[in-house]
Image (cartoon, rainbow, N blue to C red):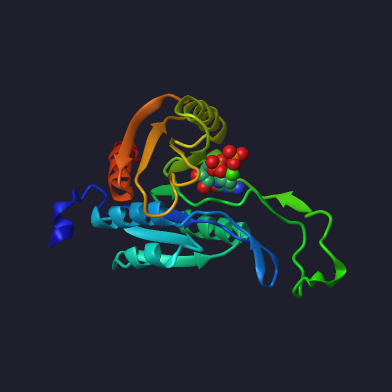
Length: 231
Ligand code: CTP
Ligand code: CA
């Protein structure tokens, strides 16, 4: 009954949300990863479900407390680990979708090779970690001919508020997404169960809105900005 209090402005829509952070294995027990809890992405997914959408949540190592929040009959969860797995899941899930929200923190680089067996310390520390760049999932989907799918990205930036916004503007122009939600991250900011604030930019880098408060508040504000742009 509570769900009916939410506007049903996503009824009949299919929404894909990525959440969490990808991990790139070095060997069977170690990986390169990041601090994303998945909380913001899960809040976006569940808010879409409350508003009537059918939701495909692609979860990249989402932590247990964020994952528990995803329990909603309209949210279907697909677990992934690496960026390559996330890219494949996004491709599958967006084929017939109305919106993609890329809230996941995607590893920019991965080890060129993954050791089949645990790396042992006996030979001493490896002198270098040989890395290769991952494909940019958001930019790839945004650049594809698409008359229907609305594409929304996130930009996590560090620095003072002016620097964060300037970096966000450049990223918005570069990515070609319909919307880019820019937020400041760093120690104690942006990660886990903390309040969040985003400025939402259009493809030209101009601000079209903002949302702040709990991660649920930010999710609501974001959908308020996405819904009028649905095709
Ligand atoms: N993203 C993606 N694929 C990647 C890297 C990022 O789809 N390989 C997406 C993220 O999910 C996010 C957006 O792109 O929605 C911005 O991610 P961010 O890391 O802020 O930007 P990058 O383009 O990777 O630039 P940089 O890390 O150098 O700031
Ligand atoms: Ca990045």
